Length: 456
Image (cartoon, rainbow, N blue to C red; front, side, top):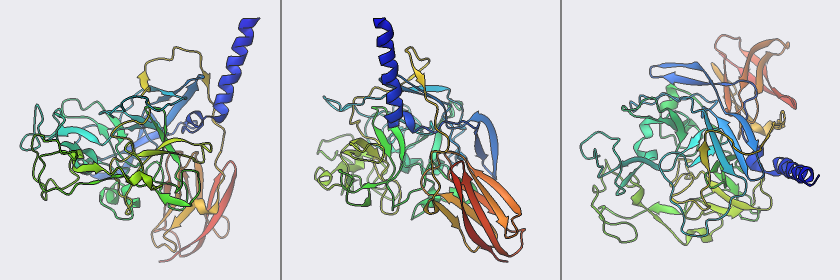
């Protein structure tokens, strides 16, 4: 009898956890068999893949949440124009993440190459590095091919050094000419498309259009977009100015800035190290991680982050407050170092990839249509239009949303779906007559309509 009561209490505790813990509730679970898509170089028509996108299931205990995913997003991946031979490929991974994250009581743990977190669509998060440094053991930035093992001195910043290899959504797969099958698609930075930045620094979207996990909205608190390997949540670029949830919405700012140097012979601490290349047009400031210094006084201002790129604060999902990381961008919405998490974790790093679940767990079944459609959540542009109409969710799409184009007689002209974990669809209007049309956006909780004009 005592064993039965203990089990019942455990079950009640676990069930209660699922109802309240954002680390269980917020994953984009693929309940409609959405599959990945990819571009190949030279072809702007996306290829539909067989691999399921987003997260396949979420299981949890009192202490842990287990995320099963193939690591494939709903938005189109590729191509990777730096001759990366890999494609985004199925990872068949289970991530074990703490539901009770705690601050590291000792020396903070440095982030590492490879996975340091996971986005809510099951895609991997990497830190700033790409594994290449000025003095590599097997090759060198100075003359040999890139891709050797870094020696820890003048480490190349992946967001800068690999920009050519990022797709429209600012992601790429791990891979090399030695092992092209790796295929672990990941983001080092804010997972919002290049074309949506206020200043566009990559033209890859021009031919290989995609969207990304979410759309930056400077008027709203950014969505929860992932969790780091210490269990603490990751948010987009904008949040409440003050840590108590007041002060309006503002951009979260990195406390790292570029050093004022022309030669690379010391770290910002003054420590002398093996010399790197002089600062010039090829190796400009910001090319290496060591080009940055941390400004200790910046976090005294509420909207500046600490040395881990986070702060303790209240958020919509955590009204009582929690430590949060942010995907930092500059005033032009271009990614800002250290980008998301790092160079050290705030909390005790506990997450891991596991091959199986060895404890008693419950399966979390997501609610249907948790997102109520509102007029200000949808952008329709250009309006009026001559050849193309885009319909975009502002923020993050948590379930499939149907978008239909009607004439004023109620006849459906075109129909499309914004998939969960994606944000945009397009209608080709080159073949329809000039005049007024209706865009209807709908999900299980209702619909909204917007009037658009087509002209020739």
